[in-house]
Image 1: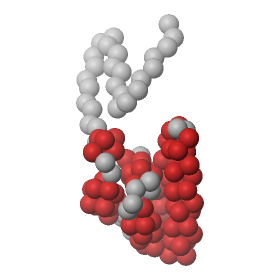
Image 2: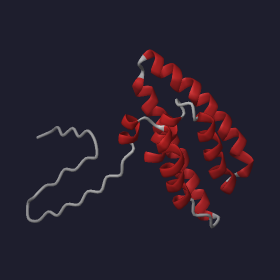
Image 3: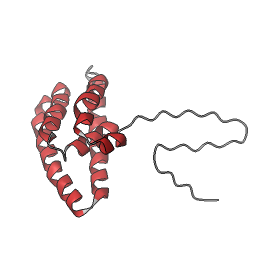
Image 4: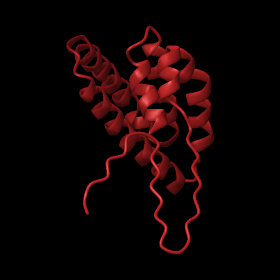
Length: 137
């Protein structure tokens, strides 16, 4: 999800063409026939992101990140099925190309969270990397 959030966030920056090119490179390794289409879709998404931000519809921007997270997950799985492991390259893209395009506040939104917990007996553990809402009895 971090990579997708970074892609969507970076699409609203002046470096959006760099983002398109970098994401296209990933797709070319597994689906070269689809790379140009993906780059075109990113350009369309940029237009939608800028419009959503202009109107204050931030929830729409989160929807874009969710959509791209699914696409990236499918790409990683497809890569593994043909013997191409994109995880290291995706992390490199995130660390060296996408995150540097973001504002300091945007960079803080793209973080790695590691949580560990140990429970015993009747203990309950609730962990969340962000918002957590617990309801019920």
